[in-house]
Length: 126
Image (cartoon, rainbow, N blue to C red):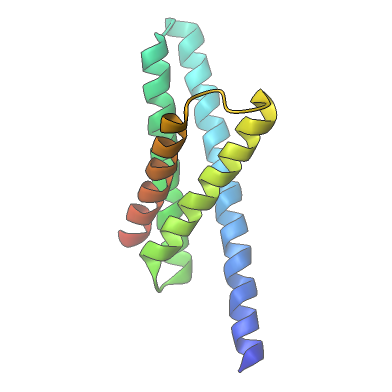
């Protein structure tokens, strides 16, 4: 019985890592596209900020959806965990690059809620 539970936990952890990797690859691709659009059309700062928000939400939704499909039960919880982990790594990278918080705490909390909620909604709809 313990071995069965251990195998399930390892399988879930591997699934989370795979989904997070796919989410970060998708985020990188979308951000490159946004950078190209910024260069080509000289987008305003507001348009770029909206684009970044859309990328975070779509990627979080897709990750939650995929994680819900892979796990099969408690889909909303797996989606929320995936979104939360996605945010956590985004925050760590941001802290490393900027050597601290570049934006205010309100922005950080808003991004946390967006990533977690979009992952949870993706998981619920899977």
